[in-house]
Structure formats: structure tokens, C-alpha cells
Amino acid sequence: MLFQTTQAHEELRAKVRAFAEEEIKPIAFMLDQQNEFPDEAIRKLGEMGLMGIPFPAEYGGAGLDALSYAIAVEELARVDGGAGVILSAHVSLGSWPIFAYGTEEQKRKYLVPLAKGEKIGAFGLTEPNAGSDPAAMRATAVKDGDEYILNGTKTFITNGALADVFVGFFKTDPAAGHRGISAFIVDADAAGVTVGAHENKMGLRLSNTTDLIFENVRVRASAMVGPEGSGFKLALNALNLSRAFVATLAVGIMQRALDESVKYARERKQFNTPIIKFQMVQQMLADMAIKIEASRCLVNNTMRMMDQGIMVQKEGSICKTFVSDCAQEVTSNAVQIFGGYGYSREYPVEKLMRDCKVFQIFEGANQIQRMTIAGVLEKEYK
Image 1 (cartoon, one colour):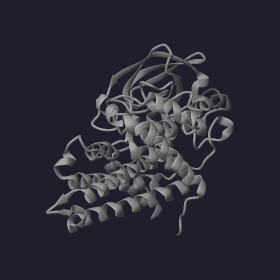
Image 2: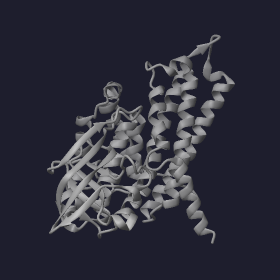
Image 3: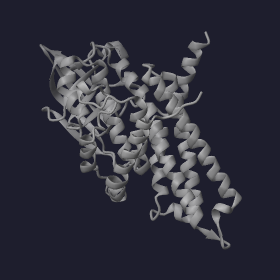
Image 4: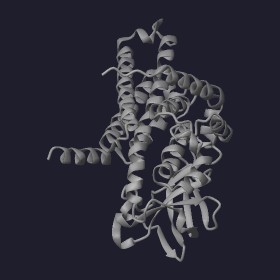
């Protein structure tokens, strides 16, 4: 089936690429070394209308399709994966649950400023001892009149220290397992909310990742997103969508790896010959291009399904698993092509390899995604 982007898609690509090259690329290496968040660049993304790409204009968004959102994420990741993660986590995890499950009042109060980029959103699900098993979470929400009292610790929170709004998950009925989990909107400046340890990560260091501590945080009952006990389903649906954008991030990084590798192979000479003429280098470059093209096609198809309202449980897991595995191979080849220089921070490919590893781990490790895919297949073939 022929799939082509529109002129509007390519105009958006050019716009985001120019922004990333001008605003993020010059400072990316410094921010990676210092583990710092690109505050000014993210503010400008909001002014450009990119922090609310897929949301309707009535809620402050740009009203664009999922592919447009994927293009923006890919182009940011092509310059720096951490910058792409900031946008992806803000939209898919910090904002989308409010759009999909929130009340009209919640959308007006929270989604509008999030979509306009006036506020940054984050998603608080993972806990130190729960990991990929949300049903084992210990954070609780105890009802007290028309309020809930929140207690617990969340970990690996993307945008944690910079977020203004969290969609957090707590057990309102601990005895009910995953059916007792509910979602709440929590303001970052609420009494009892504390930002904990900042993760000193191997890669994606422009993206801020922290713990969040909730100590007797009081929120009104109206802060609950969706019905009580629906939090587990809400979280899984948000993660299903988010996984496809993890793949988009990986495509952007792979494209940068290929760009840098071709450029270097044309310039680098051995035995008075550019190494791009060597058969082994040609094979590695060809394999990189094949994996990138296949990955981009898979991402684009998943985006098209999302635009049709499909929750892409199986497809999102397939996309995330295949593309993130490809990304490790592609960036490893890039380091190999650069030889000893590929291992040096004087050149960008070692960073690309560092940035990609986490895609096989977060949003559900690839081993778990394979279990998810197999589980869906089992049901489909009954």
C-alpha cells in the first residue's frame, strides 16, 4: 500500500528541523554533559504551537494528526533524543489522559495551558518496587470527605522536576489489585509534593528524570481522571500510544546516525581511499538504511491506525520492539564505522548509541512487549 506524507507534513518537518538545528543542536552537547533541561528551547516550542500538536484547537492545540506529531518528535530526536522525549512525554503521557478521560472542567483548567506550552505535564506511574507491574504499586489515595489524601513515591518520572502538572496513579482500593487503581491530576506546587532524586542517566540527559514524593497531599475528588478504579486501563491505553512515539524517537536518532556515518565515511580515508568505497562499510551503511526505512514505514502505519481511533495495543508493542532493537544495531554500526573516534566524545555517535539503549527498556521492556504481542495473538487465533 502506497503511503505518502502531504505537503503540510513536509512543511512541518522543515519547520521543526530548522528549529532543532538552530535552537537545540548548538547547546545539545553541553546540556548532555551537564545533565540540564533546555528550558528556553521548550518555551519556544510552546510558542510555535508544538506542545499540543494532536489536540483540538478548542483546547489550545494545533489540531494535527498523529503523523504530524510523530514527525515533530522524530525531527527533535534527530538532533537530540532527550529533546524528543520531553515533547513525547508531555503530550502522550502528561496531557493525553486528560484529553481522553478528563471532564470538560479538567480540560479547560489543565489541558488548555498544557497544549499551549504554558505548562509542562508529566506522568507518575512507576514505583521503585513495582516497575513493570503497576498492580503492585503501594501509593494510596484515601478518601476524606470531598478530598483524597495521596501518599507514595514514584520513580523515573520524565519531566519530573520541571512539570507543573502530574497525572498520578494511586490505589483507592488496595484490596482490588489493578481494579483498585485510580488516576488524579496533581499540581506540582500542591502542599506535600516533593521532587526527589534526579537520575544521572547514561543517555537522554537533556530529559529531566526524577523521583516524586507525595506526603499527605490533599486533592479534591474532582481531580480524579475517569471513574474510580479505571486508572489501570487509563495508564495502559496511554502507554500503548506512547510506545509508538518511543519508536519515532528511535527513528530520529537512527537517521542522525546514518547522516553522520555517510558524511564521515566519505571524508575518512584509509590506504588513500575514502572508506565509503570499502565493501564492509558499504554493507553496514546499507543495513542501517534498510532498518531505518523499515522502521519509519512501521511507525507511519501505526500513526495512521491511531488516527483511525485504534488503540494499537499489539501494533504499538510491535512497533516499539522492532524499532528500538533496530536502533541499537544502527547506532552500534555508526560507532563501528567511526572506529576509535566513534568511542570518543569528540564525535556524536557515541551519544546516539547511549541515547538509544533506554528505548529497549522503558515504556515496558522489549521482553514484556513480546509477551504482550503473544498474548494478543493467542486471543486472535482462538
